[in-house]
Image (cartoon, rainbow, N blue to C red; front, side, top):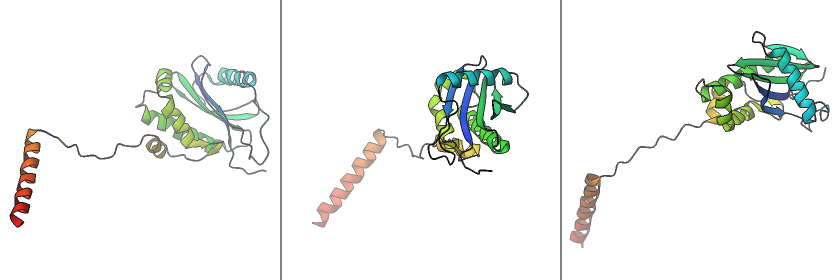
Length: 185
């Protein structure tokens, strides 16, 4: 058994018709077994995605072994999120990463996770993905941590209201200070 941190081969988001919304394939050169020779071309990737979608298009399951790949998936309205790993990977770890990613996206998009919302906020979705998986290594499985890293809250700034009264108050303060200085001389 070869233990490695590189547990994710691909991350996919497919729509309800099986079309690619987002796909990220990981082939780290520093992997202990060398660079993967699997799913290299776009044609191979599309065929894999189409076959995977055919097997998982109906809600009900959450894990499947397809084409010697372990695929965990989660349905969300008109989208399906997938994390693809090797056939010997820990499916619980893959599933916890998928749930964390999915929940973080739900938080950031305010539960409006459909194809249009994902495409309009693709930058947030990609940042969530990068915070969850880095070069095939699962780095975070807590959805609130992922969401907080992606959207930083605005710094607490006290709003300064400038109106005629504050300008007159500032003028009076400056005038008094100047008079005190002149009287000291």
